[in-house]
Image (cartoon, rainbow, N blue to C red; front, side, top):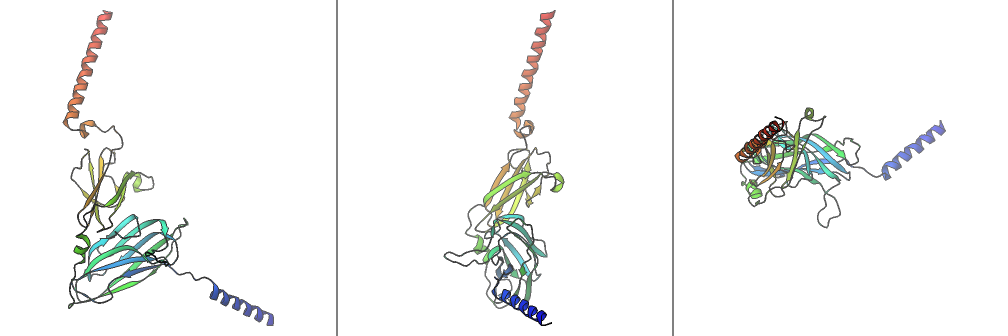
Length: 313
């Protein structure tokens, strides 16, 4: 019994020593940063969803934020986001703010100029305003992070909440106009690719695209499928990936990125092959050219047949 007691005491002592000197590993956190003081009803405010990796190296994120009915969501801004490749661009479905994306190369924190300590980075920012006096709770309801080691394991971060208080007696500001009025530049880095995969969308052709805007942020992407080398004007609001309507791949595909100040960037993707009917692609002069060539061919063939008959008769 004395030996067991001694061994138990030694084991307990070792455990206590390990907890005292072992390196502490903090869990990654998702934080909601917004106004701490009450805001006026109708006053526009900015709320940031930020990631604090707490020393972990992370390269993918998926988040669902429960959005209160007391706050009107005015704009979603991703210009300052640490996420550069969106698998689902930030969107509001009427109840929740939903997003998912990849951080190529991983993310361990953001460093300020001359700083030595990594801080949190912005995933997405939201501009909103209060509808009525009272309290509104914004809460991260679902969140998944993935480490930058290829393991595919899921990291479940700590999720914080933000309580916004509204009053009637405070001055009103206009952050949306201040945010976008000076932006005169088109979205940058617009790229697109048409692909097909047996495991995606029932093996249908789809297009993926992305762009960024460091000033006012991307508001929407639009897509237009046209039989001509110019857009038809039938633009559809689209998210990446987008399943092509023309699965024959005989159409030009145009992607347009528009920022919150109305600046645009455009890219076009050609049909799958040059076998697309020239009658559809080139206008009337192509038709007359083809008719003329066919006429010359018929005349040449008739002359050759006539010459052969004379030779053998």
